[in-house]
Image (tube, chains in turn cyan, orange):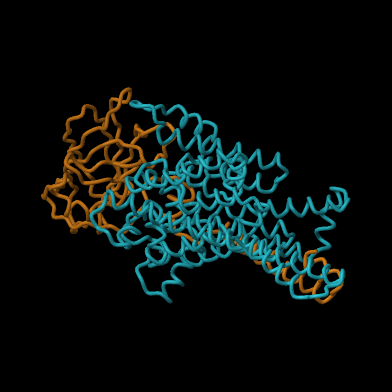
Amino acid sequence: MAKGRTNKLATVIKGTGHASSLTDQGKHFEISHDRRSIDKRLLEASAVVAVPLLFAISGIAIRYAAFASVSAEPDFESYARALCRWDCHWYVDISELGYESFPIPNQSNVGRWGFFPLYPMLVAGIRTVFPFPTILVASITSIACSYAACLVAWPLFGKNMRAYVLYCAFLLSGPFSFHFTTFLTEPLFVLLTSCVFLALKRSNYLVAGVSSALLSATRLVGVLVVFATAIQMFQQHRGQGNTALSFPRWLLSRPDLLVAILISPAGLFAYILFLYVTVGDGFAFLHVQRAFGRVAGNPLLFLWDGLSAVPTTGWLPTAPQWSALAALTGLALSVVLAVRGQYGAGLFCAVCIILPLITNLASMVRYVIGLAPLIMLMAILLSASKLIWLAILVLFLGACYFMTMAWIGGYLALV
Amino acid sequence: MPWSDTLWPYDRAGSFGGYMVAAVLAVSEVVILALALHPDVNADYRAYYIDRTTTCLNRDALGSYTVGQRVSFRSDGAKQAAGMLVCGWSGPVADGTHSLGETSRLRLEIPPLRDGLTATLQMAAVIRPPQMSQRVLISVNGIPTHKVTLSGKEPTTVSFVIPHAAFANAKALDMAFDYLDGIPPSAAASNIYKRSIKLVSFRLDAA
């Protein structure tokens, strides 16, 4: 349609001169060409903006349908509350009450310290402007963050619209879309991860550093993205024909790069300082893991234990099997990222999987699907064939319904 | 071209400012790290969260108790029992209050007494083959008082004397149960989830 409009416009331009010279015709051609290019860009921009919006709407409809099939209360707040499961309640508490000092009230061992502050702080800030129930504000903020994450991801897809559509569908209408639309840190984590990698792609290290700082205040593993920044700097240095040995010297001669690296963990350090002042222990977010029963062990053994937890009835994999499979798939995709030359993203994703795997397989599915570079890669790989792309798209939308029901029902693999 | 390439190499003031910001960030991070490596916490916090030398995080629970009174640790006595539970317990439920971890503690207020006390506890062992018995070390206000081996699923009545010296100057009686044979729910599970006994009832009488 836009193309037709451009052609008409070109004809009108051409038809205005009765005695057009060859130069005039050339000018007219340039104008029509520029106009066509502008229209194409407008169309593309409209699609980039509209696609995640459509999936945001369809996602709400599908998840609401799943909720309505098991609930008698039809209002949106009940829906938002039904989707608020597991860690979501911790974030609601942090957003409303903040963090406890020690001793923890109600004679509890489990402080909120293990949950990072940026997202609950953001929701608390928005709630001061829009005084609605926390879960409502958080759900809308999460959808907005996931929507923004899609927009930020577009330049990372290299104009691959099919992959972009699949990515948007996955985040906003996919089988795990409840993770990206309720009060969990995944929406902000994916958004900030995308910001970091987009900034790195554009060699804008200061923006990458500031985004990393925010990421490190969102989840502990967010701080690991600094390695991706350092690798990108190294690649840029090598790309300029310099030797690897001269990298430290080059880095020290660039204060902007030093600031970018040193600011990256600032969010984590700010939280450590806050915990030191509040609890007396800056590493309370690590130490409190004891109260959650997390103990360090051999990741390979955890994986093996998970894989060998075969179902006693039926053929569907058990929750530990799903978790182990998610970890293995995530690690395999990290390797693929590295093979494709995205060393920083590959390393970041692999470490983000291995680090929690040291304690056990808990929440592994959520951790893996919250790694934006992996999901982008998956979207690119699955969109290579149009037929497969279409089938996966339909599968995502259908699975959204059933997985939402499983989430509401408390299926352990989705925790 | 990144903004940094255009700005920094030609702007000495900017370059100096950049180094200053980098230095401030580095120093701040080192200072915060140093603070974090030297936590300012009490002994209970340190023992449970940092050193991991106990599974029982001490709290300022203090139950009211009258000597001679029998306290049920099943669901029916939940109200009174709850005040006495310091840490290392789960429940009460129908068959008693279950121990959780490697140590459990009870604390109750006691009046000044001239003589020692006789404690009478009803306890049952948690059994999962091959672990068929549970050894329990009971201490009062830090003084080892009794050692018992429980076997069989049925509750066993255990009586022992608490010497007056154990609580002579104390306003509270702090009874600790250390379990030597706790059963973890799985090989990889944390020791905070070990199961050893079910406490059914508790009674103190003047000796």
